[in-house]
Length: 124
Image (cartoon, rainbow, N blue to C red; front, side, top):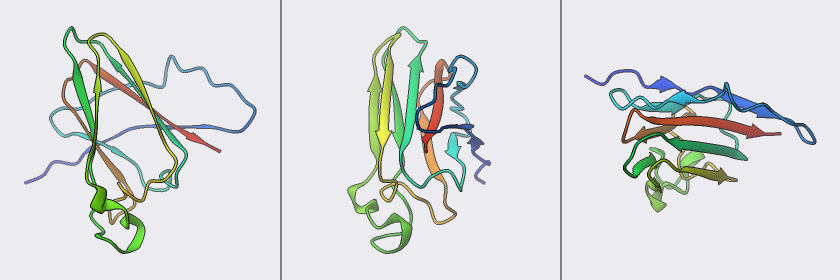
């Protein structure tokens, strides 16, 4: 039985504004994994990852489940895995979410270590 994924909060950043980022990070859920909720996945997403561990960690955005039609028409490109250096930070800018969109409109995010914090921003 699959457990429900833990939703990541998406912080909107309107054009020509600034956002305080200290309180927007969430600890990665390595037991249930994470999800970017539906309604916030139209593109122009920034995923900011901070690795608090002494070893490199990975963050994987899972390919969508829509095949080559519908909102996940680019899912054939597969998962995207980024490695975050030990005690490092990494930023990923997604301009097109069609590779990762699930049939329910979410994006699934798997994180390899609980010492990895994630923040998601929607540029608008």
